[in-house]
Image 1 (tube, one colour):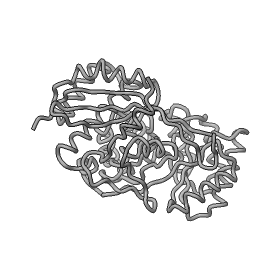
Image 2 (cartoon, helix red, strand yellow):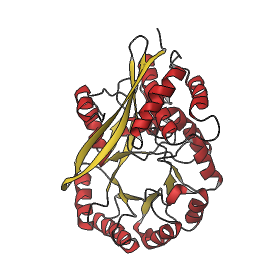
Image 3 (spheres, rainbow, N blue to C red):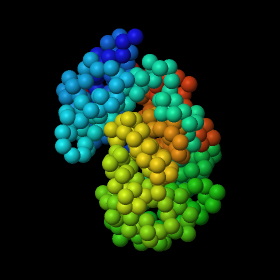
Image 4 (cartoon, helix red, strand yellow):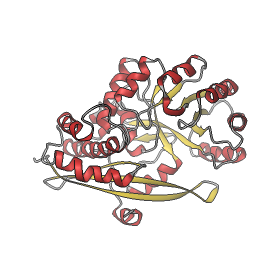
Length: 366
């Protein structure tokens, strides 16, 4: 059986979906779809996004493909070793080169799963056949009462774990405090509630916010400060009982090592779409196990990230994101959907999804 890389294709796609309660207030999602084809015609699919997407496509097709064409898809360490010299001969990989690597690596894992007849979660260790989920819903577009209404819609669908954004209130800190208290008071204590600043606020803002919402029993505070500087995260962590998490956009193993050394975070949240693929997330998972930290997921891309949450010991929660979920249901014919707050690993090999070719045409960005 041949397992050698024959071709790699990549293209940019954009999908726009309305928010619940907000017709006409659409949230767009731009992604790069990458297809790695073996010389016997098997195709694996990976994805990344959402910045500099056309530059990412160029990196994949003009630089990565010539470097690894003809290599065996199963030789992941050899492939990454060769690509290191192409993508970043010195120092840390980041930005376009890391996103391009992510898309290609995910497609390779999809292929390896097909060849072996196992889902990626099984290749990672098969700890469980499912991942419990939390739902990101609390966007800045919503007024406090709308936040509660959308939350109750999700609870009616079987969800008990929700995440809302902070750093989004029009009047700054007082507004963020009111929004969090309003949601907690309305939903009661039985619903898990997390917050996410998307690295948008200062350390001082984050400290004051934590002091004023600590009584709301916040499950975690994600990406709380600008740049997620290890020193700032450590300072914040020393002053609050709210667990801190990070890793969505720069969650490679070196970054997590720095956070661990600074004693800066409680929860590991890598995303294989941005970290360098599942190969890098596997390395992050090893660090999480060594230091006995839970490993979750943030940043959307549940089709992919649910596999590391299910496959690795220490995996906790995978993210369902209202915007990203709509994209995945559109671009894949068989994207898994949560049932009673849980995603089940597809009983198909690889990532277990099939591209919707018609949707690919409709969403293509030339």
